[in-house]
Structures are given as structure tokens and as C-alpha cells.
Image (tube, rainbow, N blue to C red):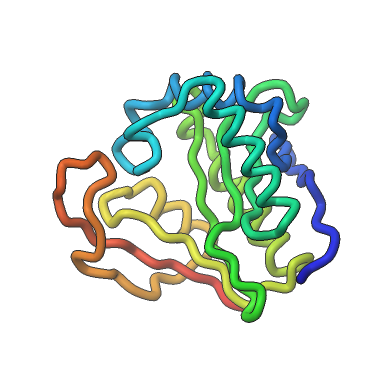
Length: 184
């Protein structure tokens, strides 16, 4: 198992920080304000939690971070005062080693390059500090903004998984998944 992993990563405009139980209220506010956009792409946004639920969720995310089973980072403004979104490495496989970057941005901050900046920082961290050999970004084929970020950061399209999932909004429409990667 990998040793110490930094809990904070700074970029020019952002602070990526491991979750803490006390982040529950901020996460609740950010998700609630962003539900119309999140529901299009995120299964978990279909049944959002209340503030206590997000507090429990943040506690579980902090525990997963400590155990290195998932490395979730909350995206804050540079001063660490305003929650802008969430990112992190999911689907970790320490034997390869590899991970998958996921991200979402608070609606008020969308379109300002925050997801790209956070994913770029995680890409460098993954290959540099964590020693990853492969990093993926997966998204619904209709999520053009997410696919744009992957391409912008130099991720190549490995596959289009045809009819491999249903729409996040629960409407039952069959969707394709795009799998982008970078290898080192």
C-alpha cells in the first residue's frame, strides 16, 4: 500500500483538499445549488442527501482517503473559503498502479476552467507523486464539456463503450461511455 499522500494540492487559483466531516454543510449547499446540471450526468445527484447526509458522506470520504481506497479532493477557491466542486481519483488499482479522475463543478463556477485546472493538477500528481502508469477520464458520450476537458489535457480516446449504461437521470435511455486515458 502506498504511504503518505498529501492532503492538499495547490494550483494557481484552487486548493484541492482531502474531505473532512466538517465539510458536509458546504457540500450540501454546493450540490443543492447545482442539482439541475448535476442530475444530467451524475447518478448520485438523483437522490441528493440532506446536510446530515453530506456530513456522513464527507466522513466516509475522509476515511476512504485515509485507507487509500479512494482519493477524493474537494475543490476550494485559493483561500479555502468557498467550495467550488469535487474531484479525485476513483477506481484505484494500486497494483498497476492506475486511477480514474472524476470531477464536478458548482454551477456558479462552471465554464471558468476550474475542472480543467483541477484535473491537470491531479494528472501531474498521479504520474509524479503516486507513480501511476495509467489515468482515465470516463464520461457519458453526450457530456461534451467533460469530453472536451479530457481532450484539452491530452487524454486520448481509448474507447466508446456502446450501450453500456443508462442515463444518469433515470429516464432509462441507453447511453455510450467515452473512455479517455493517458499513460506513463
